[in-house]
Each structure stands twice: as C-alpha cells, then as structure tokens.
Length: 278
Image 1 (cartoon, rainbow, N blue to C red):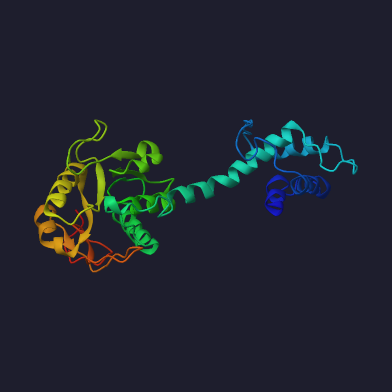
Image 2: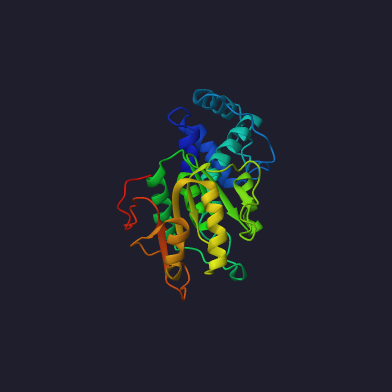
C-alpha cells in the first residue's frame, strides 16, 4: 500500500519528505473512519493536476513535529486518501462480485457451475460472435454472465434471467425467470431484442428444454448458444435449429451426464454448422 499511495499521490510532484509523511501516517495509524468504509464523502477533483496540487498544499500544512506518534492530516488530505482507497477497491470489488462461484451452487436448484476455463471460453465465444456493445441475454447461465461481466464489465450489455433470487445482487441486470412461465417477462423486455441468447436449462427434460426454447426464440434476433446434455441433441435441433459443437464444456464438479454446447451460427467452438453467419 505504501508504494502504491506514493505513486498515486506524489507522481513526481510531492517531495520525498511529504510523500514519506503520508506513508508514515499509514504505518502509524489505522485508516481514518470514512476512508475505507466510505462514511465520509470526498469532493471529487476534476483534473489530475488539481488533485496533485491539493495534496501538495494540504500535506505541507501538516505538522511535521517528530513528537507526534501519528502525523495529523488535514481534511483535504483525508479526502484525497479516501478517493485513493475507493479507486483501489473498485477493481477488486468488480472481480469479486462477478467471479464464477461468487454465489455458491444450490444443488436443489440443479446448479452446477462451469469451470473457470469453460466460462471464459464461452464468454469469449459470445463476444466473438456478436462484438462488443451488443445485447446479450443469459438464461439460467450465471457462470457465463459472471465471466462476461468480469472480462468486459464496461463494454457489454447483458442481463441474467434466473430463478435464484440470490442473483438479484446484480441489480437491474437480474430478471426473475421461471421456465414454467417462459413468456412471463417484464414489459421492458421486448421481442427479438438481444443479439445472442445463451441458455443452460436447469433440467435435462423435454419439458424444460421445450419451455426454455420458447423464451430463447422470443428474445433472440437470431443467434443462439445452448448448453445442455448430449441426450438433448435431437430435441435441441428440432426446437431451435442448433448443432452440436466439438467443444466440450467442463464443470467444477463432475456430472454423470455428458454435457455439450450447441449453436446455430458459424462458431469458434468448432460447430458442425457450415453456413454463413446469420
């Protein structure tokens, strides 16, 4: 933390003495209330130069008496430190919230998360198929949603349709979904409004796939990436016109049934589809 703070606050502007004073503060004292927990609202600085100048002036107003066990920091410097802490925490918070497995599997809901490698491969496949800035719907596929957000959180528009309300922590991107009511969706979700739909029906049954297929066809403009058991191949092709890919997805836990991916477009997953992208 000391090195990072010196780099951010000083950046060839603060003297060694003043930057060392800030480092001494961090070593001697616990972070002030409001710096780590956001309890004190910092005034945003509109330019990098202004932030540096503010830190320079406020630090030089501090007492440099060696008799104090802990340096006294001005309100301006505390605000600058708070801003630094918040900036440092943001990337790790994004990574933590969207890491595959951030929410534990619930076997009673037939939840089995993909391995991290599989989730990343499928997320990259989605971006490759439609490009950044496109709209993506993930139906009962939280691992792929999480990986898309982890890798591309600033440049993807993606929603997660999920029965498990624990995923409501993702705010407006969460849409409650029960495959038993395949078209019971919010008014804001309009027909054929997503460039690709990624779906992983929770159960290997004709009923579940048939009803999920209704949702898929309602949402997609054309492209479909379906993940389900190999035993569903014939029905999947019949309902959605998808073909099995050569790529074999893996889960964090071993499943008794062979699992496969299916698409209806030319895919880097080595699909047997040989037509042009539609």
